[in-house]
Length: 255
Image: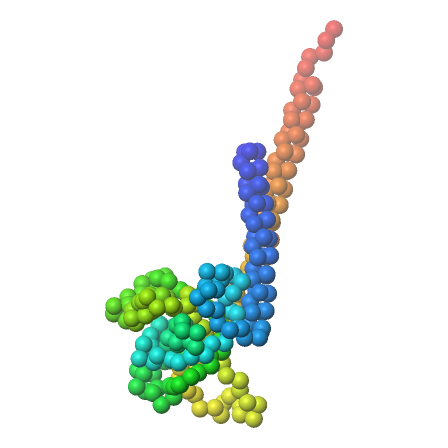
């Protein structure tokens, strides 16, 4: 029992220390994201920089790219947002530097999924896009796999989408850009603005950070285990002393 309790104490303590390390990592990540999101837009990384990109350091960086959209190669990806279920509208943009980058232009509800309904508002000609660098999402969702041949997309897998749209063999960025929401003029309250689709600016920037709670839980279990172990050891000593005392009283007197 003593060995099992000691092992449990060591395990709980180790898990608590691990969660403290995870807490430090998560807080550093959140701080990094905050710096990236509010920094000045940098030029979209080109092919020479792709191998050096790091997810934790570069995701959510503000980028600016200029080029032309290829609307005929638009791809819809299933989405669940604060506006409900629908689709992300991802459109490849050929940059002035000659490489392609997928741009998540925003969300559309199911009734606006057909490009013909949005033709009048499609940006044409040279465009400057400002948004956040996002990492590619290969494979699909947890329950459904992407099927490019059927046009069923459940994650924003930039290389698979590029292959499905005939861009294989051309330089395609390993990231995509979430278009930032346009600034809302102070003289025009949001309630008076006519909604347009796709709707940008829905990037989720909330990160769960429960590591402190987890750490305290593991340390509490370690303390409870140590307390129980201490009680057992103390009780064993008490019983041993009591047994020795009884044995000494029961021993016959020597003559």
